[in-house]
Length: 380
Ligand code: HEM
Image 1 (tube, protein in one colour):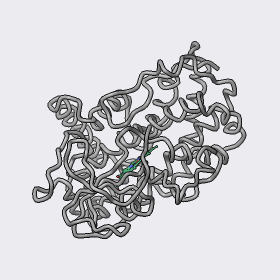
Image 2 (spheres, helix red, strand yellow):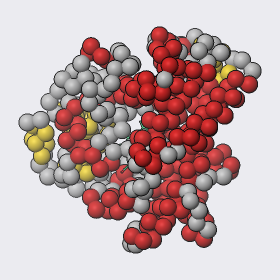
Image 3 (cartoon, protein in one colour):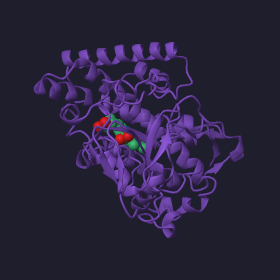
Image 4 (cartoon, helix red, strand yellow):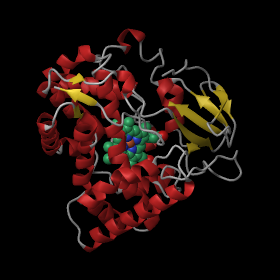
């Protein structure tokens, strides 16, 4: 994939043809994502340049991602304690045992094994299901919801609307069930915190819960699939060292997250609420800004070319693959841990893992903003 060279903020066009400002240098992207003069809530406001509002979850105005300032913080606080590095570290034993179960099914399956069906998909699905206390029926519908929630705009709008209505009904029922009968899962924690806080619109809680179901597995599944394809082809030399220790696998996981984008759509958009200077260029009030994290992750002033191809070189600065600022990925620690454990144990358990198909024959998922192999056939 071509990333282009980072440079000064400059006018560009979004995929729907609407005007925007492209911000691509590492410090500039960090500024846009962290500065409260840029926001998402008014991204689609009528008085700015029009933006097409494709159906799906990401454009849902009730989604936490589309709230700014105190309203955003209020929602995020309902999960403040759940996703801290310390809290996530306590999940390590049971996440490791899910990884082990998946390794068993890889080793017991008839070869060649589809590692997507046996590993990269069921692992994050099992993790988020356990955290949220989801049953088998929800697990079965999760991919259907994800494919529609993260549509790239190519799906029929009515079909997406129907899938999202079904998903919202599920989210509302899940919240109601946990209000009636609280447990020690994440959804019960959200309900408790929201009731203590008071005043949070129910629709925002429903979108929050739905966002966790799909956000909690789709990105991790995508990263795992793409990382494995790389490690079993061009990056095969790194496989033995991944097996040697969890620490090295953690550094490699960070590099892989940093390098491999979730999809073709690398930028994240914000609206400038007033005139703001970014990297010496004045962005006018009302402008839509496309912060290109993929390009910024390759900013040569921050990430030297000398370490770019070394999977075991610690990153010189925090990656922007999880964003930055108030919307910094809530699940970053969890995703890192899943990736680290998965890669280490897979490499340790299957030192001879090989791709059993030519790389060019890999079929890619289409129709969604995230992009990863539909299946990956391997032998061990
Ligand atoms: C490899 C895995 C993942 C990647 C690369 C990723 C990436 C991101 C990025 C880039 C953002 C910020 C978007 C922006 O500011 O434009 C984000 C936000 C978010 N992510 Fe993740 N994510 C991953 C896994 C997860 C997981 C496992 C969860 C949940 C358990 C999760 C939940 C969220 C939520 C709720 C937000 C919105 C935060 C807010 O608006 O305050 N993500 N993610």
